[in-house]
Image 1 (cartoon, rainbow, N blue to C red):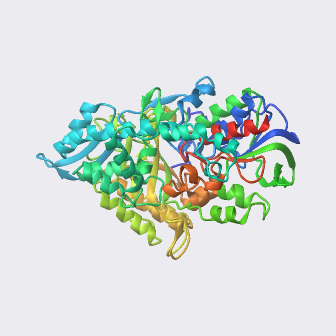
Image 2 (image 1 turned 90 degrees about the vertical axis):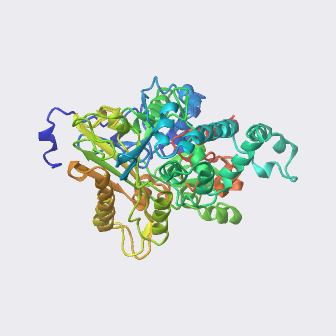
Image 3 (image 1 turned 135 degrees about the vertical axis):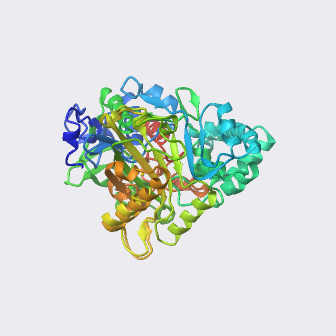
Length: 620
C-alpha cells in the first residue's frame, strides 16, 4: 500500500523541513569558537541561543542529519510527518519561550482539551454498554465523567487536583534555579563558595509547602508508591490506573514502586499559553520546537552543523579546549557544552583517566534503564473506539485529541507489564499511550489520513529469548495501534503515535532483532484492535523504536528518554551525580547542558539555559 501512496494522494506535497539537513548555517565551519555545543537536541540549541545572544561565538555540532535530538520531526512514511520520539509539549518553560522569541521564530502550539481518554472494553453501568473516562480542563465535566465509576471519587478528584497544584506551585522555583551544590555548603568550603549558594538555598527554602498537610503529601509523593497515594484518594480502578500512567511514563518502575509519585509531579508541572498543566501539539511536529530555537540561535549569529559527529573532547592541562570530529577535524574553543548523556559526555568522549576515580565510579552507577518502545503509525482513517463510536467516518471527536490510554482498566495491568519486563520479556499486555496530533494539526498527514503515535511500556533492552529484529518489532506493534495538527499527514490520513511500556532494553535470552520488534508491534496492534476494531486494516506504515533503537538513533543511553532515571537518588543535588550537579565537572571549561542535568528530562529547556548561564559567568 505504501508503494501506491503517491497515486492515492498525488496532490500532497512533501513538507518535511525538520527531516533534512539544517540549512540556516550562515558560515563555514571554523577552527575556533568561543563555545562548542555537542549535540543539537533542544537543550543544546537553547544553550547555543543564550550564549550567542550574550555575544559569544557559538558552534553546534550534531551527529545526525537532522537537528532536534529527541524533539524531531521525520517523514519516515511518505506524506506523514512523525514526531519520532517526544510527541507533546507542556514543560518548555514560559520564560525560555519569551527570552528566545520562539513564536516569532515559528513555534505554534495547538492546545489540547480534553487531555486524557481511557476507553474500557468490558461493559458496565445500567445500560450494559462499554464505558470510557474523558478528562480535561472543564472541572464540572470531569466530575460527571468520574461519577460514572464513583461519586465519592468525583468529589475527591477536585481536592486531589488542588493538592497537586499547591505542591507544584511550591516547588516550581526549583525548576528555574540551579540546585544547591553540596560541596560548596560543607564545612570545608570557602566563604566565597558558601556565599555562591545563597540563591539556590533561597529557592530550596521557597519550595517547602506552606501547609502542614501539603508537607505530608509532598513527602509521600517523593517516597511512597503511586498505588498507595491513589488508594488513599480514590476507589475506582479506571481513574486510578489512568492517573498512575503519569507516574511510570518512561521509567522502568511500577506504580507499586516506592517514590514513583515524583514522576507524576514532573508531568503536571507544565504550562502553555498561561494555562497551568496544559499540554499541546506543535504544528509540524516536535521538530518545529527545535527548528524555532535553532532559528533564534542562527539569527543571532550561531552556526549549527549537522552530520558532524564528535569523537572526543580535547583536554589539555585539565581544561576542555575543543573537540575532535570523527573525520579527524579539530575545533578549538574556550568552553565545551555537551548535550549528550552523562555517560556519553564523561565516559565516552573524554580521554581515559581524565576524571577522578570516585567521580567516574559514581557516573558508572547511574541508571539508564528504559521500558519504552515508541511506535509511529500512519493510518488512512481515524480509530473507531467501541466505547465511543465515531458519529461518521472521518469526523474528529473530542477523545481523538486527547492522550488515549489503553490497557489501563486496572493498576494491576500496568504492574503486570512491568513484571514481564523485569523477567526479560516484553509485556504481553503493554501499557499504551496513543496520541493523534493530526486531529489538531492538518500539516502532518494527507487529507483523510492520520498520524498515530504509540508510546508503549514495558519492553526490556535485552530480550530473554531472542533479540529485537523486524519480526519481533512487528509482533509487538500488532498488539496495540493520531489528531490535532493537520500539518503532519496528507489530507484524509492520520499519524498515530504509540508510546508503550514495558519493553526492557535487554531481553533475558536474546536481543531485539527484526523478528522480535515485529512480534512486539503485532502484540500492540492486536490490543488496539480490541478497543477499536478496524485499526489494523487502516495502517499504511509504521516505525518501531525499541530501547536499543532509541539509543542508537538518538544517542540516549539505554534508550532512557530522560538521559537517566528520574528517581529520587538521581534528582536535584544528585543529578547526574552530587559532584557534577552544578553543570560543571573537574575539567575546567566542560559543562553538561542536557537532560542528564537538573531538573531532568522532558522538552523543558532548563538544563540548556542554566548551563549557558553558568558558562557565561566563567567566560567573562
